[in-house]
Amino acid sequence: MITDRVLIESLTVYTTIGVYDWEKTIKQKLVLDLEIAWDNKPAGKSDKVEFCLDYFVVCQSITSFIEANKFELIETVAERVAELVIAQFSVQWLKIKVSKPDAIANAGNVAVLIERSAN
Ligand SMILES: Nc1nc2c(c(=O)[nH]1)N=C([C@H](O)[C@@H](O)CO)CN2
Image (cartoon, rainbow, N blue to C red; front, side):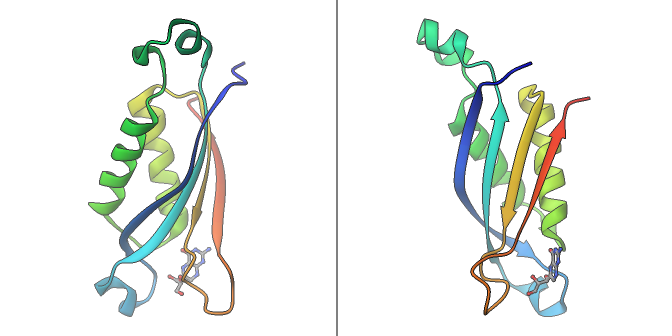
């Protein structure tokens, strides 16, 4: 079992997201936090980028995917991003929080949190 993690915090992306008609013509802010299981020892021992989970590439991939698509629910964003990261980077397990911080005027934040495994 992998106990090491790569963390991505407060990844901010603007996209078309929402259930209501008025939301389908604008872009809104989503903020993602990811906890990704990855054995960091080979990278740490060798100092070679090819052994690490490159958070730069992961962030680019997630951002491009979300920006290029439209969604109704933040649950869908979480599920699709989990599928993408597991498939594209051979990840065994991850946890993703997707926040829509401007959705509710009198709430500091709303979010969903999911954990998914490769199998
Ligand atoms: N669990 C969820 N509830 C709601 C969502 C959502 O994505 N997940 N979305 C909306 C609307 O789009 C809302 O953000 C508009 O303020 C309502 N409930």
